Image (tube, rainbow, N blue to C red; front, side):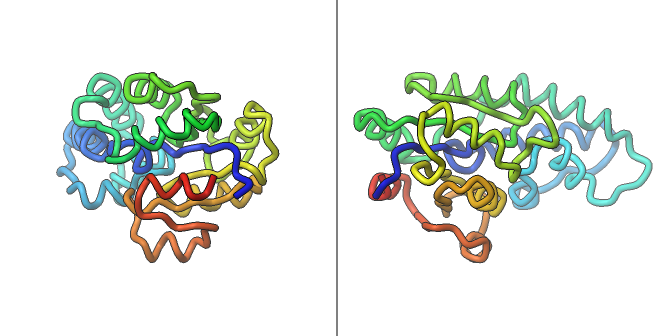
Length: 214
């Protein structure tokens, strides 16, 4: 393979963040007088950034204080994001081997940038990452390719030599928009059929399969 750089999505790809995100969402819902959402629902809402996550959690509720919901969710997550969050099995070993091979790595997430940086440093700080980028501006949110292209540039690689590993159709579309190799991870928060329908270049079931693509 000609792949020489790897960019990872964070939620559902590198780390299992669902329990902490669901706790934050349910704290926000309680603060505005709405019932809790089951984890199975929150799982489907993850991946498009905090504003979209909160809007999906409201599920059409009218006359609710959206800004209050956002404020409570963000505060709760800031304080508790690492309480129940762990790397997926096989991810540390994969990153060890990529580092040993000298393959540059980066992180690109639709999670708010402050949370992306805090979580990445806490869970993956022992690996050198070329870039860690989270949500900062709506116009740059995945599937917009511009931040991914900047990461490729920071790696000193053309997009065609970089792969984006993610667990959603948004990640696959981002990769396609940037001209990088789209690798769909089935261990995350989307169904296998949904990932196949999005048209990735590769579909993988275990982190170690990334190594066969480098």
